Length: 216
Image (cartoon, rainbow, N blue to C red; front, top):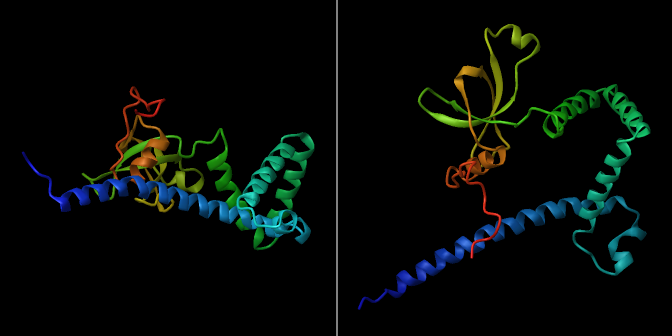
């Protein structure tokens, strides 16, 4: 009859506990950071409307709900004719303000590309050779070169974004021949998880998909 060493058993329990606690702790930390940031919108309200005055105590998340409601209200108003006219007038006004105009125009162009439903940004995951031949990484198709840049490129080129791991918010912008890219049968979300996990979380084949019910 074999006996299990106490030290080995404790180490196994500890590692198992870490696998359960660490993802939950990081998730709660990120949510707390996001909600705490959005709660700063409460400081824009008059003092009489603060949760401390109305409820007698600070209610976390109230500012986040207020921010979400404000964004939804702006989106609702911007969908009608009058709202679209006001948005166009507001864009024109900001773009003609010195210093502010160029910054606003650049940020708006990027946000329109990334958030618009009919945009092409981050719509496809690609496999490319980078940073040297024989070494591969995942990139995202962002479009095609245009303007003066396209005139200096011979052939069919595409624009791609190569994110860094584990932080995909930083990366490199490259323009390379379309023939040097391989389109992956992988969703953008799955590719991002693959990059953030540094290859630990392997994407499932599209035919298998994700389970609809939690494992028993």
